[in-house]
Amino acid sequence: MDERHTNRELYFKEQGTTVQKYVLPFIEDVMTIDENTSVLEIGCGEGGNLVPFLERGCKRIVGIDMADNKIENARTYFAKQKNHENISFISDDIYNIDPEELGQFDIIITRDVLEHIHGQEKFMHFVKGFLKPEGKFFLGFPPWHNPFGGHQQMCKSKFLSRLPYFHILPKFMYRGILKMFGESDKTLDVLLEIKDTRITIERFERILKKENYKKDKRVFYFINPNYEVKFGMKPRIAWSFISAIPFLRNFLITTNYYVISYPGTSKDKK
Image 1 (cartoon, rainbow, N blue to C red):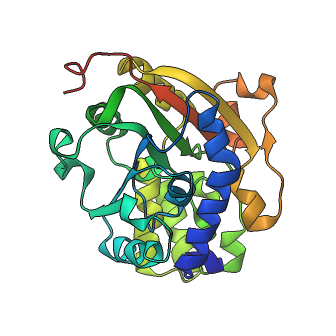
Image 2 (image 1 turned 135 degrees about the vertical axis):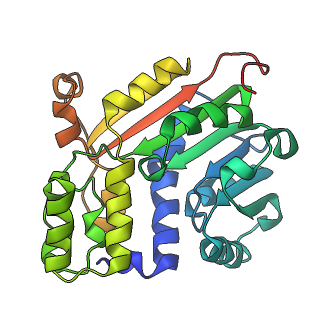
Image 3 (image 1 turned 45 degrees about the vertical axis):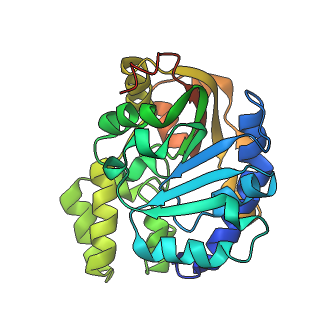
């Protein structure tokens, strides 16, 4: 298990570094981000992804996460940040939040979150209510079939944490291997849940089409931009011919970056 899975402040700082260097410029290719930009992150954890938006001067930033302990950490970490009064955190399930009460945002972010969500179709429909008519929705997620799409880097076993692709084995075999190497019941629950909520590029694209989202920008990476701060590896965009091959691309691409928008009316979003 990597230190970042136990040292949450380290993970917080790594998130901010990657967003500052790669995610912020990615979004800025399709919209302006300044002090008037409002930002909502769903599944924010400790909120590290939001630091660059606060430093940019955004005056309304909201992070939502179901984990009470992570929200407590977020409030502690951001108390040290300049202009921390511009950011607030909510510990709750997004489905318990009324869009009319919270309001709409210029940017919504979910980064390394979609693969954990049960019912991604329901989620992608529901979040429209939080998006302004001209707003943008950034999503980054690893396709299930990529070498570490099962998040097996969380394993206590050093061998399993570095073993690619074994998460795509049938569930009973996957569980058996995890137990054989002494992984805890808690780790098994987390990894098996990810197997249940897994998502591929093709299914995500079908959801976008069904929900009438517009793809403003899309990039597939062989080497995840986050690997730079974790492992010192420079990001690498996937070759276009690989990106164009359905199913196969899921095995080679470590993350996808999307910026999407919903050109429907406010009434459509309810």
